[in-house]
Length: 148
Image 1 (cartoon, rainbow, N blue to C red):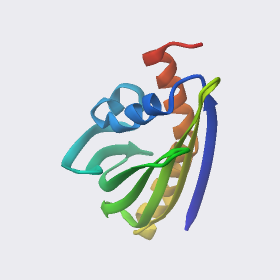
Image 2 (image 1 turned 120 degrees about the vertical axis):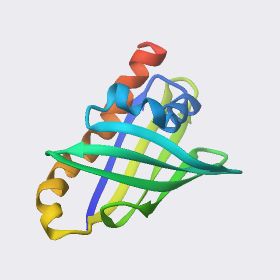
Image 3 (image 1 turned 180 degrees about the horizontal axis):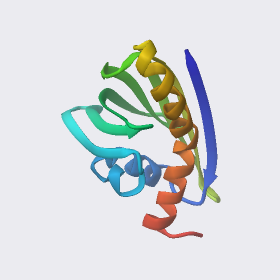
């Protein structure tokens, strides 16, 4: 199983960063490997969403159930696999406010690709994509909210 943990301090509010992560339909505008993003279902504290992605010439679709909880000192979005090319996939985004500076954004992912054939090509590319995902959202925040 592959595990990735990335974080960044950003000059933007935690709620603004959560809004970027929740705006799945706009992912193709700034994630070059994302072909489409969609929300399947919404419920009281989250939603089920999916993406069609193309990595290393392999196109796949997957979906996760995303549950958002607001804690006193952070916002957490837990992700659990619903369908896709993974045997397992779960993770979380954490958004911790720092009122004077902005916020800290953290992504933790654990996943395992289902198919060995697909795994060799796709998994290596997905590792690279997942490792730069926080950076992609930080760059997007600069475009959407401006740089401070």
